[in-house]
Amino acid sequence: MKKLFFTITVLSSLLISAQEGAIVTMHAVLVEGDLAAFEKVESDYMQRVAQHAAEKGDILAWNLLKAVRQDGVNDEEQYNYMFVQSNKTVEDILDPKNMFWNLAEDVLNAEEMADLNALRGKFTWTKDVHVIYRVESGLWFPSNSAGYTDAVIQFNFARPKDKSGFLAENASIWKSFFAANGPKMNMLSWGAANKIHPVGDEWASVMTWDMFSSLADLFKYRLGDMPDGIEPPVGESNMSEINPGGFYQVATWQWMAGASAN
Image 1 (cartoon, rainbow, N blue to C red):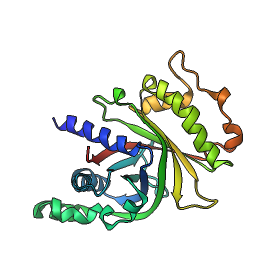
Image 2 (image 1 turned 180 degrees about the vertical axis):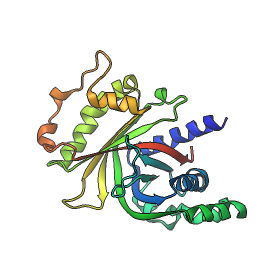
Image 3 (image 1 turned 90 degrees about the vertical axis):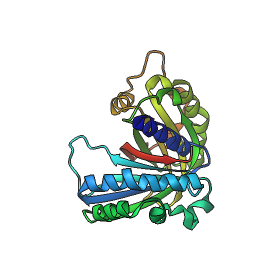
């Protein structure tokens, strides 16, 4: 029963993140020290606090992701965890209620709070960064969701020459392609988003994501190893002119925990 609830929770939370018009805050952190203690705090305790906030309507959803590193080494220069939080509007992300972690004492009992505080003493956050996007195009494929707990998500960051054209082509051409073929590739979700904050030449102005049931499915997608009959609409695309530099950064994350009102 616990595994079933776990699966349903991630499905509904990531579904909300894919809703068009949702405001998504990506908060990447570098955690050092006892990482198991950090994961227990967030996956066990703060997940419950986030769930409470989602059910109250203070947030839409919250997710905890862990950086995928094949060598198993914790790189001290790179962020190793990320919180992804969804809200309905820009006003909601600026509302004090969005800071759901302040409600911990309303959700956890005294013994749990004592354990949480003891665990927090075993690790530190050495740096972090917040970025905010609005989802412009989004898809979710529930047919691929049954029973999985190994979901991975790839975020693709770009600074296209034509930002409006980039978002328009993703909405018209690539959304249709993934809507028709995503389930055949074990894809769970796809989307494109418009950067709200921060902005500037050193920051991405748009982002897309590709979410799969497993890391193996994602790697096959990267290699172009698609089921027979699937042909990406490259001939219809004008992306070589819209975004001649391609994606300058691609980051891969493992899903760990989530919360949602659904």
